[in-house]
Image: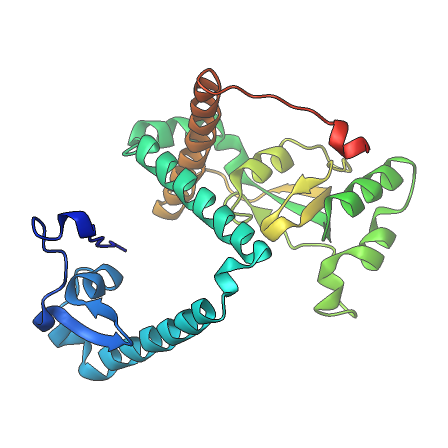
Length: 272
């Protein structure tokens, strides 16, 4: 969203106030202008979306603005806990916006996609059957992994602890069907799984939405005589390679900035 700030000292030089004809809706002096509205719904032909949808959007804006103004009136934004969260949101947003700009137009070429596919072509001929334990925290995942290494039964722990058991206790889905490359979606995890040997059990792996995954390779079966680079697989490889480039860029970029900023660490307050 673009915010238009008027500096009182320059009010006679720069007229920042929106023209009355540009104001779509007001709430106690808060105004939604045409320019701001177009930031919410860019590149839209308003004649095509209908007045009902536009009014629904404006109703949502009015509701949010009323709640925002009431929170300000009650001084919610002055509370220390709220100020802390707002500061964190601001920091996170600005950091991500900086990285987005610096990462810029980085892309993945067709050659890079084909090179990756050729390097992993053999994997696309196979499918794997897995035992899986999905765990809610790193601590529980690490403890479960250590117990398995010490001889605990993988499938017993899966039935007792895997999050999947909550969906259907009678069928907790601790064993998958045969999964070909491209189905698991996270290519980094897939690469690791397809390099495993039958019977091998993985370490705890960071998974979706903060969960952790431990897998056991039960079986590997050849399902194709020839691997094919489909458009779907191309898209998945593109996303994976772009994410890999992003992580590499982020590490190098932050390392370069560390030379500019003084960093000190003192753990003493944690020990008091």
